[in-house]
Length: 290
Length: 235
Image (cartoon, rainbow over all chains, first blue to last red; front, side, top):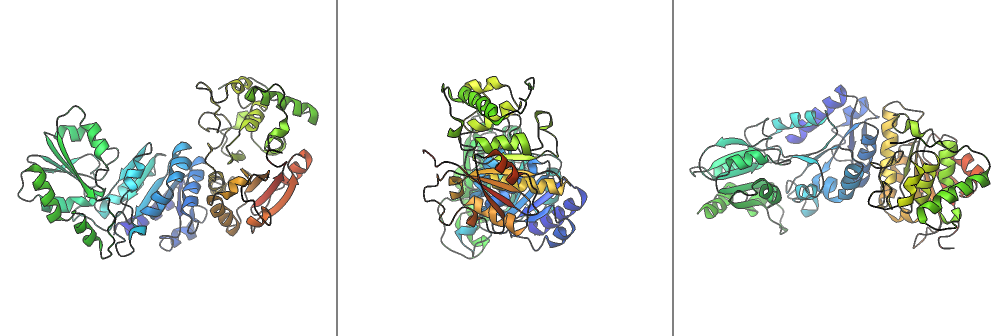
């Protein structure tokens, strides 16, 4: 589980680096209890107060600490959006926002606990690096690297993960060479590999969609591009369009649909409903490539 | 940055009032400017003149006292006090809100020496201040104090109440000052202090420098609210 990896890595960071601080809003507080006992002044649980969590992170950063904050994506990003915008960005400070839940991990909880729009919201703001790990073993390096600077970093943890980790998956990593390019972001890799079995395509992987590897994308694009993301379809349209400016191309953006699916079930049910399982992806990709 | 202007020496109250009035006139362009038109002026002056351990030379010192103007609206008094204390040149006051001016209608910490936070959207300063106070404590700067100034209407924003409750629950030593000019649309029946359970509270005349000083100076071992009462807005 990515969440366990996050807890272990962040607990170790708190032990190793006195600059590290952690701000929680009840979610995962119990798992961080040992860290809180050892570092009561740097592990803070503000209760069910996500706006305060983000503001406190901004204040900690203003004094020179490196705050990590954490909750479900809809609460840390959607709800506290203005705090991220003003109490981090406008103050010219940074933090590491680590979320769980993603687009539909909390399938049975319903839409209140889901954030398909988190990355799109962060795209309206300046200077966020966005990590979307596809495997738990990709998580520790992301968190440790973020401790060494003061920029704004988002780490999007999900239950869905790939069978293999690619710890150096920031720049586009070519995993299959062939014809038109299919870019898989984070946990979309396994379904994309399965969906494109036997198709003459190039499959490239990234777990760091922001900043997008624009140079890599240009180098790999020969005409048709398919982008498969585990959040709102088209979130990367602007970044892809900017990277491919002046290069003739056709592009298909696949991801989570905008319509709320008022059903419960599990995340694989929702992946299927959004056409993000292997058969759904294959149908869309084959239709686009013709 | 230029710190060539010496802070003005403190003498009599009336002289300071005149001086601040002159600086305020440079900001507003009004010939005659009553300092009393600015609800925050006296609190700000007492803070920077008598309470805060921060000078133009120590704006980057990690252990300086912090003052956060949460109520970023109408920062003329703030700018006048910072200029009077030499944080930036007085001639900055002549172009408020201009393209080439560092001084906007809401302050930007990135542009103005001595400004700790950029504010404007209400309800952000207290949460930031709580983070600052926690950050100072975590780094062992136990002498450093954190002050946040809010307006009574600003308390309408719900985010403040997240901070008020958390500071009380954790007995965090932070000082909040609410300037009460009765500008909240629906008011605060029962009084502002009643909204700060678990805080030490004092209510003082927000125009009385000596009383303000006596309220602001003592350290508390838990959160401390000072309601500074001034004339009703528009009166």
